[in-house]
Image (cartoon, rainbow, N blue to C red; front, side, top):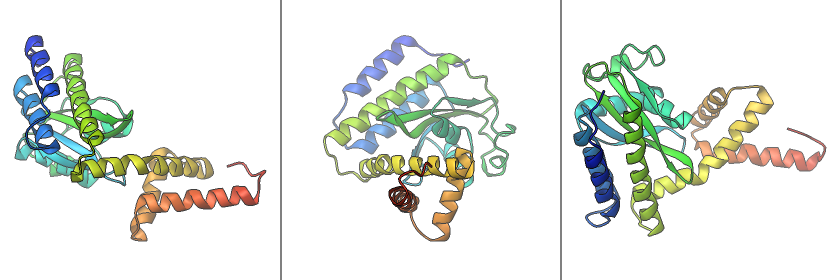
Length: 242
């Protein structure tokens, strides 16, 4: 079990919540990740954020081993952090290298990435990324671990909201707002495909993304076109029920 000093946790959270100076949003996010790593004694920590097509990309990791974890999940589209984002819930694994849920990860990971935990980062109640930590040996995660990660994920959310409300023109803020704007369209298109073709959410999104890639278009553009065609059919046939 990871040892957590409650007083140190509260003091650190308050300090980060009040600090809005310095050099911008990425600087704040890096500081939060570094504090999580040092305060709880993990082997490393990192942040991943979703692009417009819901693919997670790493923004920052504390070391090369952590970067291998983020890169492996970005390449394969699977892993504990991807699952935390997709399911909007905390996901842990005692040993990611032997976890049968994500067999494609093992060959891409640094050998010292073993126990992994990830929690979602949300904006407006919608997951937009994950805060992730790892241990260099198999690790039994406790509820105190995930609670602490959720607390820091909330700090990250506050930093993002404050930056966006201040109309900061950082590239990351623009990308996050873009992802939020188009996620609703993509989710509606996925729901439409699920109902029409009796698919799971994962199958519907995989098919939508493949069609977008094959046609060299953005997923959001294809989703909007699909919903537009659906709307036109409903207008032409008012009694039609999708």
